[in-house]
Each structure stands twice: as C-alpha cells, then as structure tokens.
Length: 283
Ligand code: NAP
Image (cartoon, rainbow, N blue to C red):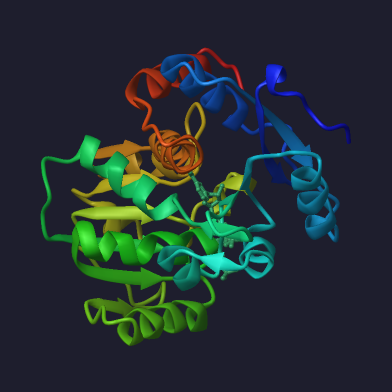
C-alpha cells in the first residue's frame, strides 16, 4: 500500500468479508461533502483469517480510521488497546481510530445509532416494552443502549436460548435488571417494539416465533433493503408499522464520522437519498 498525500484526503475504510455491497463509502462521502471535510473512504475485503494484518497494513499506510463489519467485529475488539464501554460490553467494535495517547481505540456505535433512529421514528422517550430477537454481536451491541434510552422492559429471545440467557445475565451483572430471556416457544406479547437483530433475513427467512408477538407492535429490522423478509412478515402479522435498519446504518456512521472528524453530520438527507436509491432497486 502506498502512503497517501494530504492532497488526496485523509483515508478511511470499511473492512469486512464480504464488503462489496457496503453502503458505508456512499454515506461517509455524503457526510464529508456536507461538512466540507476532505476524506477518501474505501471498502477493503480482508481474508477470513486476515483481519489483523489487513487493519495493520491500512493504518501503516496512513489510514486515519476504519469501520469494521461482519465477521470481524469480535476480532476488532481484541485488536484495539482501548475499548469504549459499549464495545467492551458487546465484545464488538465497529469503529477504530488512533487514540489521543497513541494506540488503537475501538468503539461500538451500533447501539447509539439504533437509539437515534428509533427516536426519529417514535414519539419521544418512553418506557417501552421491547422484544429483541437475536443474541449475536448486533444484539449485544444494542441491548444496553436500548435499556438505557427506551426500554422499560427488554425481552430477549434467540434461536439458541443459552445465548439469550447469557446476554440477560450479562446485562444484570452490568446493573441492568430489566432484561429477561425467553425461549422462542414461550414468547408471548404484546410488545410495543419488536426488533429483529437476527441474520435470518440473509436467507430470506424470519425467526421461528409466533406471529402473534407482532400484533400491534412497531417492528424494526436491523437488516435493510427494498423490502426485508422480516418487515414483510411483520406487516402481514399485524404489526402497526415496520421499518428496516437503513436509518440505524446512517446514524451509526454519523457517530463514527464524528469520532474521526469532530463534527456531527446531518443524517436525514443522507438516509432519504439512500432510501430513494434502494427503493429504485439500487444497492
Ligand atoms: P451474528 O453475530 O452472526 O448473530 C446472528 C444472530 O442471528 C444470532 O442470534 C443467530 O442465532 C441468529 N440467527 C441466524 N439465523 C437465524 C435463523 N434462521 N432463525 C433465527 N435466528 C437466526 O450477526 P450480527 O452481527 O448480530 O448481525 C445480525 C444482523 O444485524 C445482520 O443481518 C446484520 O446485517 C444486521 N446489522 C445491521 C446493522 C445496521 O446498521 N443496520 C448493524 C449491525 C448489524 P443463533 O445464536 O441461534 O445462531
């Protein structure tokens, strides 16, 4: 990799596998135009066993910061020297920068990004009854911010129930007593908000829970796209509204951009532009 001159803009990237369809370059380039920042943002596909050498090469060649996506968020949390509290809780890092005292610092902006998008969609802060489906990296990242900002009660259900139990215990140990784990079979509503943090939609599937848990609920899918399988199923099952995770994606990116550049971009124009692009069939 070649050292980049300042005239080419500070260099940022998203590292993942696969990464070809990541919208992050479009989002960060739009933020940079909006805030008059001079940056360059690229996608880097790391080999599955090669996250550390890829991220070291990126920073060694002058990279200023990177996002980390599937499947490397756990590797990234072990790679950095300093973890913010959300990243430490989730064991997952989605944003890396060189800290003020040197050494790599890792952050997890997924949870605050989801909360910011839910605040856009829901009327003001409320003590909501929330069902979180999934207990993987994304669920671990969003569970505590949800409890702190919006959820009076959080029910966690996962295909592998032991992982939901472990997340609820971990929340209790971290001073959040209002989370409980329930198996898919025992789940019953009603819930104000049902969040799909599973990756079932990658195979065009939905979690195997009773459709009745969606009745009257606001459904939110962390996946995004023209129409996700979860959003389609939620509306057919009586959800009052269903939203995909595009807004979360843009909001978590804005928080990363602010960590890197010290300026918070406007998310809404970027979200709307991407929505129009996805609805028109673009990727
Ligand atoms: P992960 O760590 O691999 O976890 C996957 C989760 O999905 C696990 O809880 C797994 O359950 C569950 N799962 C997989 N297939 C399932 C199926 N057929 N039925 C029911 N549950 C199933 O993945 P992740 O990082 O948490 O990501 C989850 C989703 O969130 C992905 O689609 C990702 O794209 C999305 N995401 C979106 C944003 C955003 O900004 N919008 C940010 C982060 C993540 P088991 O434990 O039983 O395997």
